[in-house]
Length: 192
Length: 319
Image 1 (cartoon, rainbow over the protein chains, first blue to last red):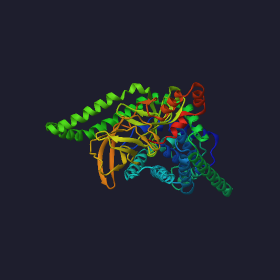
Image 2: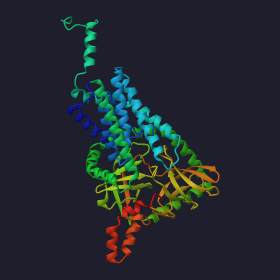
Image 3: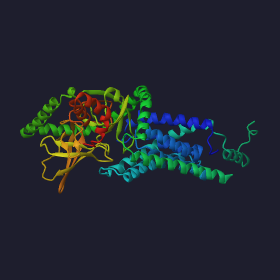
């Protein structure tokens, strides 16, 4: 799969970004579970990277981060920075390792959520917060990562289904299918 | 070919990271009336009608999730509430406890009656978005400067103080909750009048702390904490006197100061409808208006034109 996104992919990623940000701020943030709200945005960024490659992942991360910062009137650039790293990292994982395990999205989702929450905390502390930081923050991060991990697979399924039609055929996937056929897979003729 | 792709990929990453850092530095360094803040306000103006529409359309879904959440929450709390109920019933049997509770309730009742909230030109608004972030405890509301909402106006719900307005657009505004790390409130213990500053406890959205309370201050668990409305060295308090903030949940003895934790009165995660006190006595915008009104007409119009009340208000800081 090319790491250079085409127009159709870019349009689909842009639509996905808008929908996920409004969904997050309009519904998901207002339904806390164990005192913490699920954050879909880092998951979507990571899965765009995992599906489309590091370049698209980084650009999507920057764009979604900027949208989040603008919509929620937060410190501009903070979410963009963290999400750019998440999108790029997930994309590089795909390009270097090409992970095909069914649980890969689960692990990538957990890593994205942890990076997002820990990244925010580190940046906020670095920028200077005039308030006592409680150990409860750690519990909230752990619960947040766990919740995001729980929803990672369905989110991956939706992102994958949304982006797959506009992506070009993956040559590695084609090679893999051909190898399976030549090394003992069923021939279309044998079905007849 | 591969090298070219790798170079391009790295270049894009470097550009995006650099852009983020530039934005971050510029935003962090500029004043609340700076260019990037203006861009954010403009964006909020554009998206707030969409957010409002999406919020209304998605309300049934949210209510459904909320119903499940509330049902689970209610179930887990049932045993605890029953235990508390028995304990309270036993306590009510003793005369001294009864008297003390009665006096506290009477004091609060008088306080509520004395607030005269209608005098503060309250503007009722709906919550249209809420931040998922642990660090930005903010909500966006569907009323803005066109409804008279200004920066630093106090915001309440039926239970008490919930925060202050930090950004306004014509038809929307952002409210930083009292549990947001950027908000501090001048407060006092209602029973004793002991003053202190209320700060959030980052990472615990249901806990506030009073700092700088002298060790000999009489305060005990169950005391109510209200806004003091006092004038500090940094300027007048943004919040009118007597707004309920919360109830003392624990008192720690750490010489030379006491560490007091408060449980907020309002349910800050389930906000739907709030009120903005657009003419709260003692608030910086209200004082700016009163100063402007006291000037002769020509100076008054000059002052009104030349000074943005939101600028005056934002210079007031937290409390």
